[in-house]
Structures are given as C-alpha cells and as structure tokens.
Image (spheres, rainbow, N blue to C red):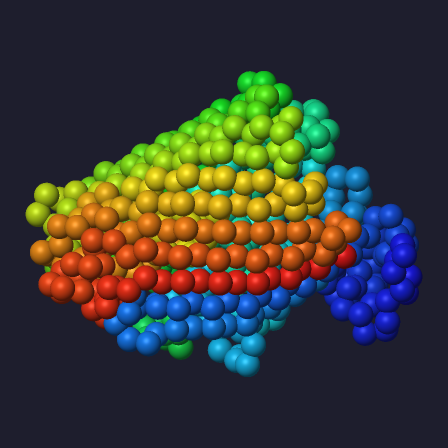
Length: 504
C-alpha cells in the first residue's frame, strides 16, 4: 500500500489499518483508506543514556547508569472534515530489562510518570475527535489523550519521561472561529476547556472497607457477584482569555476526587487516596519586545483522610497554596540573542508530616497533581512543586537558529522544615525527622545544549551538579533526616545525560 511518499510493507500495512480502526476499516466503505490526503503517519525514536553519581549523597557508593528508549508510531485518519481518528502506540523501556521502572530509579528519578501508561508496548493515545459538535467551534475528544494546560505545572504530558503521561477521558473545547488560524500562528486562542479523566479504576470483590487483595490499578471481577468501586477521577475547567496577540489570562479549576481506601502513608503520597481536593488558580503569560513574563498562583481546599484515625474518615481540611513567577529579557539585536531570566517558585508544606500526625485538623501540603516538573525546578528532577521554595537564575544563548545553550543556577529550600523533601513526581525523597530545623536543601547547577539537524534529528547533552546544603549535612551529623532511604553522607550529587531523537 502506498500512502503519500510512503510505501508500506504488508505487515506494516496491516498494523496501520488495525491502529486506525481494525476490521471495521477493512470492511466498511465509509472507513476505507481511499484518499491518502486524509491519512497521516508519523514516527518518533528517542534514545537516552543517563549517569547519576552520589544518589545517597555519599552514604554509600550508590551510583546509577541507565540506557532507555522510546519509540512512538502515530496514525490518524480524517473520516470527514470534522471527524478524525488518532492513535499513538509506543514502546518505552530500559535496555536489558523487561521490568517496568519505578518512579525512583537511580538515574532518572522519575521515568515512569503516568497512571494510564506503562513501559513496554502500550497505547499512549487513542481517541476520536469531533469538531463543530452541535455548534461551530465546539469540539469533543473521547479516549486516551494527553491533557496539558499552561506551563504544565499541574497538568502536563511529562514529555521528558520516556513513558510520558496521558489520561483516559473526555474533553470538550469551545474556541473562537479563528482558533485553528491562531494556533498555526503560535497564538493561544480564546477557549474554554472542560474535561473528565478516570485516573485509576478499581473494582473489588468485597466491601469498600475491606477490599480484595490485588492492584488498585487493575480490575477484579469477584465470583460472588458483589463489588465496590473505589476510583480516582479528575475534573477540570480551563479558560483561556487572549487579551492581546501574545498575552493571555488563564483562570482554572481542577477537582481531584478519590474514593480509594486511605493508607497510613496517605499524607506523603502524591495524589493520595480518600480525598476531595479542589484547585482554583490562574496564570498570566505573555511576551512584548524582548520581555517574557509568566505568573501563576493556585489555592487548594477540600478534605482528606489522614489514615491515622479509626475507619476511613476524611478528618483533615485541605488548606494549601502555591505560586510561581518567571521573567526574562532577550537581547534580540545582540549576536546569539542572549536571554537573562529569574524564576521564583513556592509551594506550601505542612508542619505535622515529620511528626506523623495532625493536631490542628488541617493539611497544608500542596499537591502537584500530574505535572511536567522537569523543565521548572531543575533538570536533575530532585524537586516537585510541593513544600518547596525555589530561586532560579537562567542564562541562555542561541549559537544558531537550530541550537541552544542554557545554564541554570537554582537555590532549593523547604517551605516547612517539619514536612518532607518531595522529588519530581511528588514522592518523598528526604524524610524529615521531628528534630529537623534545616530548610536549605542545597544548590543546583545545570548546563544543557541542544541542536536540531534538518528539522528531524535532535541531539542533547546535559550536566547537573547538586551542592549539598544544611539539610543534608545535619542529617549526616545528627540523623535529623534520611535521603533516598538512608542517612546521607554529606557529599554532592552529579548527573549527566545524552539523548538523540528522530522524527519522521
């Protein structure tokens, strides 16, 4: 079969046909691939090698090096001008292993980042999209899809991860009549997005109080015929108001509703079980001349179970907040167009996590939800937007139109010394003891270079060094904290990576 410039072998033809509709495509004339202009095919291959030295900050000779890859095959077909099918298969894995990596592997710290995807061969995206549904400008996207907004601080596709992040759900978008044109011109259109995503589906064979043994990410059909549903759902509304060609105001509301059984570590777990958490916030972003500016703030409220009381009561009030500010100036007339920038990030923590309980009845740790943290808080992936204070200076240049060199220097601190140090995916990295009074985690220096060849091939090199701060030093001397599960040795940490990507 020939599609545009591509001639596909028999087995690949079968795979493509199956991807965009299976047997229905082969038998129903309404779905027949008779017009190559309606069919799109794409592929991505990415290989990365990482080395991390000093994962326990000198406590042991704990070093890690990992090679991993990601291969994605994308197929789409326009059934009509307003109805399209889209599918994206991916294979993501560590070299030399078929075992799924965890969120705390030594080199990356967070390779697997999705609740709906896994390593190995998987469906990353697969949905049907309907445009101009009932009224002009209203579109529907149904199925597995990436859900991203703004700077990906709360909802992102975690593109750095080889697995990435996507959700099973429904998304409605109401945009203006010029939305497609505005997107092609790199302008954010005025739009309203409403969505629902089922993050975790749990079917158990016994009562909600005593669930059957098994993974909560799986589905168990009980022989008794009785079952209880303990799911995790995410709802959201995101409004994008384009006030000027390059300036937008973006208010939003997200609701995380979780009915799973609360565990004893619920309060230190990202997207913890048994809670109803509302996030209301907004983002201001724009560019003018050489200036770029982004401001974002969010407040969270609701109720959550501590897991420390009898039963499964949501006994704590959620009261948390986070702020971010980013400003930069690009000297466009200067050779290499250098940019200087400054960033500030804050997310509240709780004063009782280190004590293992709550006396005030409130829970103040901000939940980072499902973000892309890699680009915001240091490329070493040692921080989340959770119990943190982060100051960052950025300098970058463009040696050519297709290359970029960037240096970041970041100061990392805890917002509350009685709460823990949370890593990129929101998991606990440093466990703070009740005696911890140190807020300074350390400083991070990053250097990163990327170059694109002929719009298809991209090569990246990066280095990061983390200078251990007072938190690590006091943990070494007095045992006030553990980092990575052990008492740290007080040394620094280094990280290198090289990555090559090809798109066609």
